[in-house]
Each structure stands twice: as structure tokens, then as C-alpha cells.
Length: 114
Image (cartoon, rainbow, N blue to C red; front, top):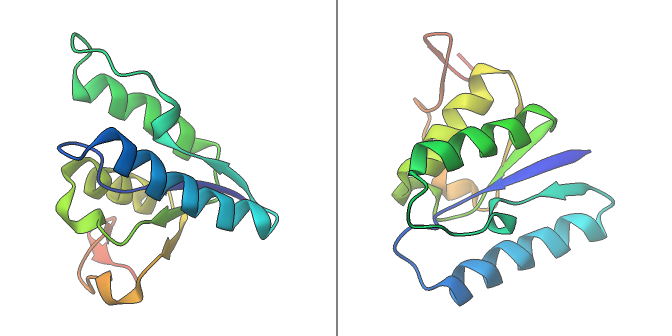
């Protein structure tokens, strides 16, 4: 399965971000999945967050699932990626099931599982 990994990036040290995304990627690849991560994108100060998000949406488009790292709730971008994935009926996988919010994401105006 092709899986996109979403999690908090902004405001964290790059080495911490790279480590957590790579760890999750390695675990999923070991299970036989093809994994897409946003940390492969270069960082440029003149590129707005909205442009990066559009690139991430393109990665989500080619995936069957999105894997939410345990810190997704504190990331505006990860929350937007989750909503986008839900809108397109992607499977949502949580690294930590304790971070599932029953009323989020909203799929076509209805909570998932409702």
C-alpha cells in the first residue's frame, strides 16, 4: 500500500523532524509499504506554507492511506492533510490511537464512522 506520513514539522528542530518521519517510514517500509514523506521537500524561506501543502496534497492523491504521527493534533498542516485525505476517502492510520478525535476529520459534513 502507498502511505503518506503526516505530522508536526513547523517549529521543531529539523533533526527531530527528520528522525521521527524516518523512523515511521522505516517501520512502514519494513511492512512492505511504499511511503511518501513531506520531509523530502527542501526548505525555502520564500515559499509559503500553502505551496508546500499543495505539494503534500499531490503526494496524498497517489496514496491509499495517510499515517498520522502521534503529534498531528498540534500541527495545522497535518490537520489540513487529514481533512484532505478524509475528503478523498483515504484510509486513516494513527500511530497512537489515543490521538483519534471522534468528530475529526469530517467527511462530507459527517464524522468518519458516523
